[in-house]
Length: 455
Ligand code: B12
Ligand code: SF4
Image 1 (tube, rainbow, N blue to C red):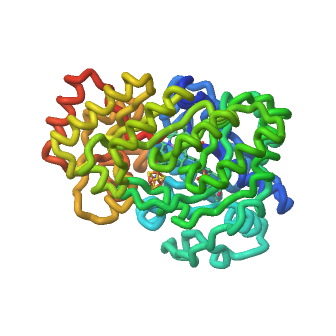
Image 2: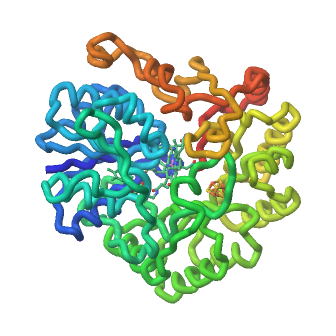
């Protein structure tokens, strides 16, 4: 038997609370369609005092299955690695598989340094997951599964050729909502496309999904929305596409179909301001769009140019003014680019206050060096771990010893992060001589310091 675990944590109420795990829902649907039965559990639904205690996590992942497959992002990898290390010590016969954007970005190094991990599935997972299930049933060899890292006979790290992306998302079954108790989730998202064509240098989305965008047909999207609205009674959803408005003609078709189908479920989207004309916004709002998340990133034209996200300032202001009259606008800004001057940061903060005046919801997050991002991969900027800031990034539990880690020697998750900057770069910042000055300035402006948060 195989157990699939979603390792994420609930977001704040404002950002939706417990969110249906879309990646795992796709994997479960593909497995079901291929005739496999999989146990599924979602860590975010646990009632725990401290989600980041590896002992809580290990209890959660322990069961009778001989394979445990875990989906995670970078931010919870230390927890996943600590928990699975203990699990593997207690049950060496179990196979531990990781997948998702966290392990994918650092797969080889992770396998080299953490020898209790047996397999890492890289990238889009439906086909890989089903082929792995067939391996675990003894019908195939790991070397014949594309898109994975696995451990060879002598413990060495082996890689198979990359998997080609699913061409049309309509080939995939609708996420397996029926296998979960959807009443336990406060929010749900759907994907209408995968990938992003843009090259923003701080982001890892296009490196992970590819710059070629794959789409679902509008009827397939409407069918899923209808199901979520009528069967599961959600009145709101998030469209998870990284940039929903890439193809404005398709967005208009979607809006038309939403109206014609008589849907009433409201939706929110991630967009770029430069891909939102007034006409498009009007159409979207008429068709149920109640909120837009805008990745604005910086108030400095210089920084925007350097991160390959050139947004014309006048256009930005005009667009945000216009949308904020029609729907909720959440703007995300980032600070801590290694080439950002104090002047650049001041412009970002000025923009932040201006956006607040327009009644936008605005967050400013510290840049997180994501392993697949161009900025990180350029190797031009060193990494620094600001341990004093870690408690705002991870839970304070990351600092406390967990007896069973590191062969019985007390060790903490922060020790793990400290020892492997190349596996956990997201917990670091890029080396920046102005860092302390920037931090002081932001604090003096009364701003909260959080990590990179596109959502
Ligand atoms: C929705 C979303 C959220 C939601 C929900 C996340 C969730 N766990 O369900 C919320 C708002 C909570 C969120 C929060 C955060 N997010 Co987020 N989020 C996204 C977003 C927009 C979509 C994710 C999604 O549902 N994708 C659709 C599904 C189908 O894809 P998937 O989950 O990756 O799964 C597929 C494959 O990865 C693979 N796969 C996944 N798991 C497994 C497991 C196995 C065994 C196998 C075989 C395959 C496999 O198969 C799946 C199907 O193809 C992405 C951007 C993106 N395009 O991915 C960012 C993204 C994933 N988030 C990101 C970040 C940084 C965060 C935060 C850490 C930000 C913060 N500081 O607060 C938080 C922390 C999350 C947490 N609570 O633990 C980064 C991740 C970077 C990284 N390297 O880890 C991304 C890529 C955006 C970005 N570039 O900034 N996020
Ligand atoms: S920041 Fe947004 S537009 Fe830029 S690459 Fe990432 S997802 Fe695409």
